Length: 78
Image (cartoon, rainbow, N blue to C red):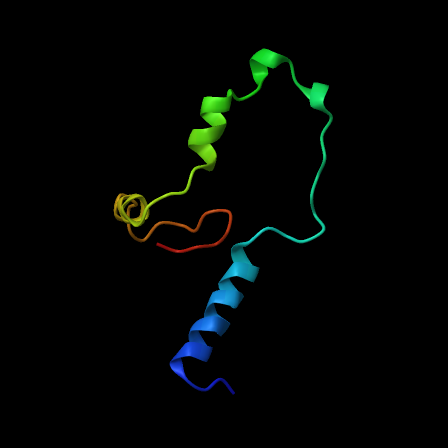
C-alpha cells in the first residue's frame, strides 16, 4: 500500500515513465552509411525534433485534438 502524497507521486511517475519510456535493451544500432546524405536529417532538423517541449506546446497539441476519436498506436484516448 502506498501512503502519502509524495510516495503516490513517485509511484505514479515511475509507472508512466516505465509505460511510455523507451524499452530497455531494445536499442537498434544502424550503420552510418545506411542512408545517402540527402536522406538524413540535418543538424538543425535534429535539434528541432529533439529539443525540450513546453507545457504550452503540450496543451496546444491536446486541445487541438478532436474528442471521441479512436486511440492511436499507443492506445491513448483523448
